[in-house]
Each structure stands twice: as C-alpha cells, then as structure tokens.
Image 1 (cartoon, rainbow, N blue to C red):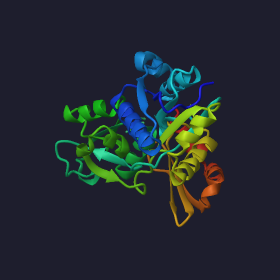
Image 2 (image 1 turned 45 degrees about the horizontal axis):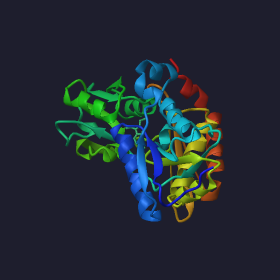
Image 3 (image 1 turned 90 degrees about the vertical axis):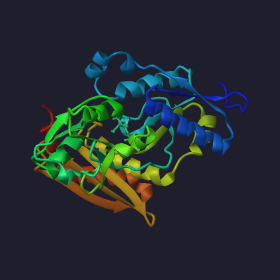
Image 4 (image 1 turned 180 degrees about the vertical axis):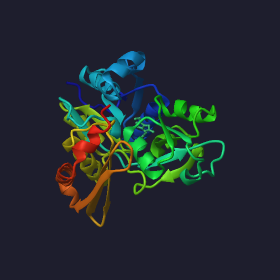
Length: 312
Ligand SMILES: NCc1[nH]cc(CCC(=O)O)c1CC(=O)O
C-alpha cells in the first residue's frame, strides 16, 4: 500500500460536470492551502454519465456515487468529493468519510427570469414551477396550492434554460449549487428553512477515501468541520431511520448555537396539505441519536403514510 508522499500529487477523482469540477477544485485548493500537498484532478466518466437509460433504470444519483467509489477501491484515484445530499445513507464497505468541510448556504431558492424581482408570492396564478424533487414539489404546493408544479430532470444549467426558453415560469434549485457554477445572478428569492426545509445534507460536501489508508484519512481530516459534520449527521440519521433516500419528500436541517444542536425535520404529503414537522435539540456529540429519535416521533405521527402518498 502506497503512502502519502509530498512529491507526487494526490489524485482527486471527479465527474466532469461543471458543478462536480468546481466543487472538486474548491476542495483541492483547500487541501493544498492547508497541507501543502499538490492535488491533480482526474476526470471520471461513470455509467450514469454514459447511459441516460441506465440512470433512469437504476434511479437517481447513486450511480454517480458508486462510479466514483469504484475508482477509489481500484486505486485509480486517492480521494473523491461528492455533494453530501446525493449520498445514500447506507455506509459504504471499505470507504471512509474522511471529511465534511464547512457547509455552504443550505437553502433552496426560486430562480426566475426575466423578472428577478418576482418572488414566489408575486407569480401569476397557476404559474409553472419546475423541480425534480418530491420534497420541493410538495413544499411548493403547501406554500401556493394554485401553482402548476412540473417534474423536470437535468443539471442546474438545463433547468435554468427551461425558464429562459419560456417553458417554465421558474425553477427551484439549491443555492449552494448555483454558487458553485456561477449562476447566483438567476436567483429571484432565497427560501428560508421555515418555508422550504432543505434536503438532509444540502450545501455540504463529502470527502471520501479508502478506509485502509489511515495516512490519507488523517490528511483529509484536516478539512473536517466539526459543526457541519454534527449537523449533517443528525439530518441524515432522520433520513436513514425513515428508510428514505434523496428522492423522498423529507426535509431536515440542523444547526448549532451555543454548543447545542437544533434539528427540524419534516415529511410532506403529496398535495402539501398535510405535513409532519418536528424539532428537537441536544448535544452535538449525540447528533445521530437526535436524528433517530426525531424520526421515531415522526413515524408515531404517521410519517409512513405521508411518504406513501408519493409512491405512485
Ligand atoms: N441532486 C442534484 C444536486 N446535488 C447537489 C446539488 C447542489 C448542491 C447541494 O445541494 O449541496 C444539486 C442540484 C440541486 O439540488 O439544485
């Protein structure tokens, strides 16, 4: 097993999409600044990038994640960076979550052109709003029952283009992702968590390497942010306990104040008219249990039934 050497650059495996390249470069720069190690980006094509049909069949982003992890396990690259919200909750065999760097803005936002002063409340009756996630769709219906919420796919650029082309009046996207691809100028309104609860882990990155490389785990660990890690641990514990994934109508957001972790999570029914939204707080060292206990309370109030409304 090779160990970390200062002379050869570390190989950071990344998908070739603009967002993936940008967030990988951001982590590479952080690591070099902090440790002096040079980092080289290695573009990786995953099955999800090659085959749209396969992506639809396997579903979601899991196929991108496992494509990158395969390159770690084969030794082709030393570490990888993912959007944390895209990671399945099951812990991967042989792979360590070496660091969760400080989180970017976790909120969702409304993106609309040409009138960037138009807030959600100003949109015309039955305006067409695009989003791919059941969580955002249901919360949009809860905020404005008259909206025509349209399911769309594709990366952020593709989605914004549907607004520019007049096919949609607006789209809802993650603020952090728009920042990474230089599209903050299309943000019309940032939606606070009390109106639109973000996806568990939204705005955070995950840095992974092989679990059998303690030298790398320690080196990458210098990028870990304790507060972000505690917050996303609590959020993802909710998702795991609900046995849900990134396409579930589940929002969760946690943040620390005065060494106390405050967690809010919600399951939203299909038409947005019903939701189960609960909060809890505790010590950051018990983040996992905080999330699990909150999910148990959500189950007790009927979370299963609301999630089931989306399964058609
Ligand atoms: N599922 C796609 C995805 N994965 C991560 C981001 C943006 C960055 C983030 O949320 O951390 C996005 C796009 C979006 O949801 O708008």
